Image (cartoon, rainbow, N blue to C red):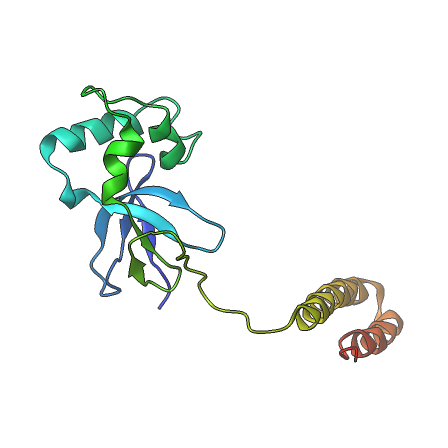
Length: 164
């Protein structure tokens, strides 16, 4: 099941369905990577003092300009400890498919695994581009008339036939 997440009232605070059971938990989102993984920690794990520290960080005027990970790296807490060093111990990762893991060296969530070869991916990407162009031409054909549509239909058939 895909990860479900909604923004909260403050930057970097989100409600995440951690167990894929419809129960959303308020979390601080440290980072979202290009693979769909979300690095977070639940706010229920914080005491009152730590919640106050986190609130000061996410209310910072730069909060919307940086990921929380980068923002914390630049901030020293009132106890003299770097915010990232302090909160990093609580961080978990949830993959795009909803699998929770503790981040560690050598492990990364990739969502769905693409087992096609590089050549198959290139052919697929080319076919997608050709099909998109054919769809745009078909839309233009609807405006220009049926003679043009006949030519587009022939081009679409030729373009979507996979190369060997």
